Length: 571
Image (cartoon, rainbow, N blue to C red; front, side, top):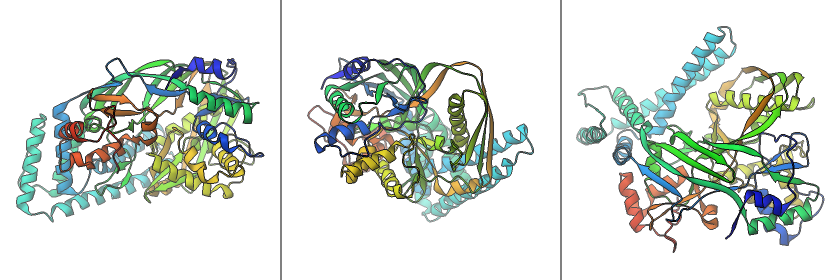
């Protein structure tokens, strides 16, 4: 299918519009009519339009900026992403991780998260004391730290208790194998007789964390933005029949770079209940524009273990960070937040009873933007541009929230569907049903008006925006947290904005490399973590510890499309 460049899209779809305003930071949906029934023949076009990430202008409510589809380029050899790996590190890491679970019933992610949460909170407390010994948040952080220490102790007891149930001969054999494999990777892991079980587990997991955090390889390639001819027809149908007053233009990014997202991780029981721990990428290099950009991602060994398994269609946990060249007027403002009863977020979903997720505009919605608004944060603009100050406040709040283990994440389609099903069920409880920054409310109303309520969730779940995720129990721990930030700027000339994207790759057994997904594969693509789990559980990798061996087996035995792309695995 023919793809058209982003600038061709603008000229074909609507007259080229000059950029006079500033987009909001959070993505939304193009507005749909709620006072008329849309025609059934147009439903496919409307479903597609709902899935396009757009940004509403700060001033002109009828102006929207769209993000064109970003897709990996394929070179003359049929390769979209060149993957190079550290074979020894990948092999050692995957084998030791499997052996470690056998002696502890604990994944490295579980250990890493428990330990890192404690260390991060200790650092936050120390930095806060240096800045202001009387800061009231110190006690809040301390309470949070106490809970984290309890969790870490609980995990260590779980591992020790499990190991003590194993026969001594089996235990000795497993630990000797672990020491040998560590040695292959150049890491010394001595076995001490009569060593405390907890101490040995901590030492083992710390060595494995060090290995998984080391250089594991790299993946490079190019991407470009654009729409297909059929995509353009759908957009033009929406514009001409249902939104003649809406102005749409490509988001005017001067340049773009990449940022890493997280994903929900599996625990030792195969349940997605863990926050992201050891990073997938050690660095994300590259850049360009929407018409073409290069990427050069350095992988940790943890990340390379996933790529080595020759994966079926997947979405890597990355997002694009774009730079808007815009003269931003000076402002002087303050941001004040009071999370008295804890981090309470209405529009959220609970996954597996443990992980709370909420969508990308939730942070800005925490900030009071009207006298009747009920929010946990308030911005006071002392002078200057209020819209620019609101942008700064949102970014400041994001940075504060991220310190407390609330992470940007890439959700699977199943998890996105679960989230939006709960949001649809909550619509009757929401009073402000016309808010411009809550586009999903408009979608639910418009689909209901047209008799499409049953498919509203599946349409909006296709949007590639990121989400936020954190531990559900820990949200209430932040009782009494207060945030105060002074926001001052003098004539800035640019602003960064996060751009959602679903760049899809699939392993091709003929070229033995990753290729860009076709449209059908894009719809079945999983997040990297899910695709990795599916590969590990596939028939080709049954009882295979080594990720390299798994990948080689899948390259020979996994079912493929006629083009040689590995077909989706079922979790």
